[in-house]
Length: 341
Image (cartoon, rainbow, N blue to C red):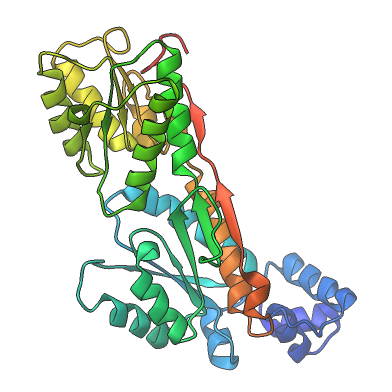
């Protein structure tokens, strides 16, 4: 038999309206009442129906995740983190894949929010890096949280989760330098993503600190894909003067570079060290496994959703939730750069 709000009210010995106020996190509810109702919900394993709550309340209990990203692992991990936060707070997650380059993208996103009665949006690149989208959402009083690449909190940004790609890329490059590599190539990602620029800047800064300069012909632009890594690594490794190490902007590119090297009978890491970024399944499924930077996408997404719940509550002043949190991906050393690591 399906558990209802009536069952919760009866077990907690409160009114149905009180249970509803607890589920809506209304600040007027006393702590002992809140604890009693939540204990009853847990005992009965009661799951509020978000659609019904949306209809019965002036508040919405659904948030949206709008994305345009070819990396399936990234998208899945982001969804997992947001879903964990939604389940914890009794929200639903509406997932909306779309084309970020569409000329009508701003109107499409606004219509999604209005049509689905969303409490707000979590934006990841490239949407989180579109000033015109942020301005349009702000003008419509739509709550949103951005996940963006950046190393330093800025007063110009609010309600953001920053990923410090610069520092992580610096650590990866420094690891290669400490192994004795000075001829290091960099395979970039899609240039419209700020993470590509941040990772390249961290790479260059590590070289400069050692008195070295990036070789222009070894800093190769491309896309965040396996195929891009294959093609660019093949070109680099076919040249007369080859790099002794490759730092790829993500694990898919690095896996592609590794594939090219193995086809050319280049020993990894004996003749060529390869490092990636993000610690996706690609980094663990190659042979040898890839050195990378662990980017905790699920945790980042969960944190962003938690922040969005705060932003979307009408009882909280927006100035109270102008938060910026920085995540620094951590270096993970594996056999692709150091044998026996």
